[in-house]
Image 1 (tube, protein in one colour):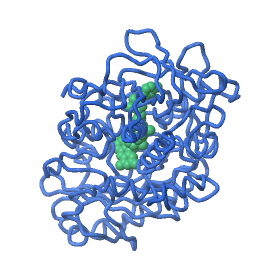
Image 2 (cartoon, helix red, strand yellow):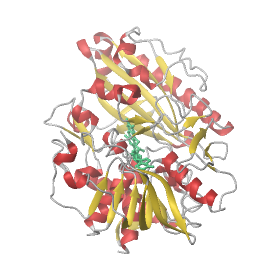
Image 3 (cartoon, protein in one colour):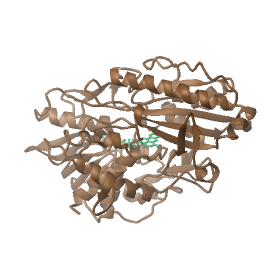
Length: 503
Ligand SMILES: Cc1cc2nc3c(=O)[nH]c(=O)nc-3n(C[C@H](O)[C@H](O)[C@H](O)COP(=O)(O)OP(=O)(O)OC[C@H]3O[C@@H](n4cnc5c(N)ncnc54)[C@H](O)[C@@H]3O)c2cc1C
């Protein structure tokens, strides 16, 4: 599908010289703001996306499951993978850590897991009380944003509903089907797509346009190099397009939605230049700490597991460990099964993890990321490993396997990452043998926390020291909690859009 021909208004040829609202980045957060502004009838909105309008469909709609998985876990196979920063603390924020630089961003890759942040993460003093109220209790005199957004996404994993039992139990834990905003294409279990705000403009199955016009213009191959600040306000942005000199676009306000590291770069440049930030860095960077264990089960062992558990994806919240446990049981070739246990836990925001720029005369400054697990994080890593050992013992008892001896490597030097789930690695293991793994920080694609609501931003996401500059996406989270971030990202993007329209 030639995206620019199928949906011409999503990729107009020339950049405007001014607009009312300029949105930087056309991924999950930026496009959700644009979509909601469009629904409100706003007409002077320009979205700038550094990447091209490539095929506008989700990778699991256009690729078979192994290819799609490979694009994520072996990013060299994805032509749109970019990492516009360097890591000072590899393996963190290196390897698979990066952006998917194309119209749609990571909304064309995500798995649709939509969980609200937990009450223990949302409590004072971290998240501002009005935000928590709007998310959890009531927004605009109706249900809260979590309830509205979940209901609108309202898509459960069709296969989970058809084939899985409602709950399952292991090691005394009750697991429920994982809510996922995905739809299968023509009932095919291997082809599906997750929600993208692009669904507002184009058909997620064919990639074709759904409407002739939109009050929002989306400009691709347009990278924002820096914000333009005058008289203490954001007044515009300098934008680079291939083969052209950087252009100036004036605006009344800019909404930064370029992902956590790019948002941080743009704000560091603006605040440091304005004398509002002494060191060219923002702390508080955090990602989820994720560890797990895979195993391949032959037909005989798989059969024994299926006597007690069903196929599907399940989860259980574990507040004491600030983590969620996920259990995934999927069929594989020849009657085999792949079983995966995973814990996703909160990394605590701290100034020891930060995004840093090198000030220069260039319009876009170089960026470096420093991140390591803190002492508190290391305690969580150890607690997760203990829990995984217990859960693994309970699971392997189901097929009469070895219930002890689950050995984890040092988190700083993982022997295996989640890329081990690729078929060639899994096939190389002995059936029933556990393969423990851990993700390095920044590779879970949940990075956030550098521009927290209620700290540098007011409760709507506007920079207190730079009016006219707004931020959306996980970078604005004052605490990450254990939940995957996108339900909160979508809810807050909608909240911001309505705030901007004054509705
Ligand atoms: C394989 C995969 C599975 C995932 N599964 C889940 C899940 O199940 N549940 C969940 O909650 N989350 C999931 N995530 C994470 C989720 O996708 C991200 O948290 C989310 O997409 C972040 O949204 P964003 O808009 O901040 O960034 P992005 O979606 O990355 O969008 C940023 C966009 O901005 C553009 N950009 C950056 N800088 C500039 C600039 N200077 N000028 C112009 N454009 C710029 C980029 O090219 C990109 O298109 C998953 C991610 C991946 C990769």
